[in-house]
Amino acid sequence: MGIIEKIKEIETEMARTQKNKATEYHLGQLKAKIAKLRTQLLEPPKGSSGAGEGFEVTKYGHGRVALIGFPSVGKSTLLTMLTGTHSEVASYEFTTLTCIPGIIHYNDTKIQLLDLPGIIEGASEGKGRGRQVIAVSKSSDIVLMVLDASKSEGHRQILTRELEAVGLRLNKRPPQIYFKKKKTGGISFNSTMQLTHVDEKLCYQILHEYKIHNAEVLFREDATVDDFIDVIEGNRKYMKCIYVYNKIDVVGIDDVDRLSRQPNSIVISCNLKACPLNTVGMDNVQYISKGKLRTVGRESMGICDCPVACVGIQSSYSSPATMLFRNLLTHCLVYITKILLLNLLQLNLDRLLARMWEAMGLVRVYTKPQGQQPDFAEPVVLSADRGGCTVEDFCNHIHRSLVKDVRYVLVWGTSAKHYPQHCGLSHLLQDEDVVQIVKKKEKDDGGGRGRFKSHSNAPARISDREKKARLKT
Figure 1 (cartoon, rainbow, N blue to C red):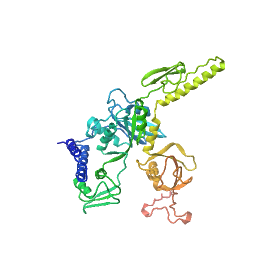
Figure 2: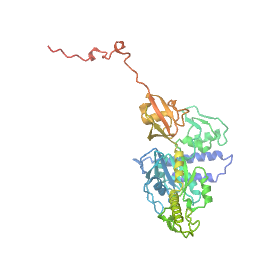
Figure 3: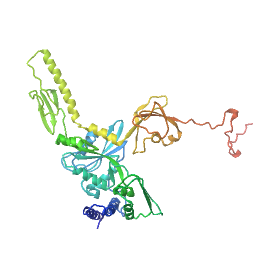
């Protein structure tokens, strides 16, 4: 029996087991067995040699974002609209067969966006190159889960379940559980609060399932059995995820409002294509909406089926002033129509970029040389997930040997209480701060000047002294 068959057998046993006080210990052991088998499933075969088959993408920029979703949900179109990188789009599924990277230039930073092939149910078991796709997503800073707004809500649960099966925890923080293996002494179990999901006996059974008989366990929060198993495994990665609902132009306004109010969710539309082709006058305005070419003329009075309101103007007067006013108002309406239609080309993509920026937590720090103006051209970009955002991390980002030469720093910005503020290496920087580094003065090793020198520069040994040349006679 293979590993996948064992996992399905245990899941079947858990499904038919009633959940009550008497069976919680048995269910805890079954969860531990499934976690062990899934860890073995992710490990490469023992007899294999060489690099495995995957997507080789070099990290570039100040952050990395991965697009994950089912086939034909608009991932390639979203990559093209955000980065300008061409990704093949077609009406059939699995158009993208490899990883296609693109660069987003936003707020003076460069963010790498990865378009990954669509995954299907069972990707955690290796179906449809699911392991390679999920492996690339593990190396990202955040995940954009692209969903079809016209499909059922089950797609979101399926993708979340597949990602959690390989060790990804979306929008969760690491549990406050201290765990350390020991050589002797048995199992020491303690907690700083009352536990409602686990107890000491259940923790002992889970540890024995992992063949751990000497360890120290401390619960600092009311964690669950799954959290305790994740701490024991030690290979879980906690990432932020934004649920992007695409194709909102084919659903009603009530569904759009409901989806937009869900936590960590945002609604967009990459299929809403509206571009003015002929806007010379209001007599003939053509636009594309929902894949069809439509024309609005002067005879269309009031509000038409155009995404914007086109107003027809008629007047019984033919004076030059009336005609001038009519032409001026017509050109103003055409200009406003162009702006609105161009904004509809990227429906809510600006808020998507703002949400990505907020989730990544990037901090831009500008440098200021002594006696000069700050350099706002190229900021130093820091992140809490990539090293930290303190002054020491800022110095290490510039050069590793700079920390030992720092005397103090002057900080301007939101993190400073007054301008400028003298700060040390532990000061936490915030976005758009300006930093000036003041280095230590070099000490004079001469020990005095002139005849007050405490020592000479001559070598200590006579044999090391330079011999003078012989005098010419």
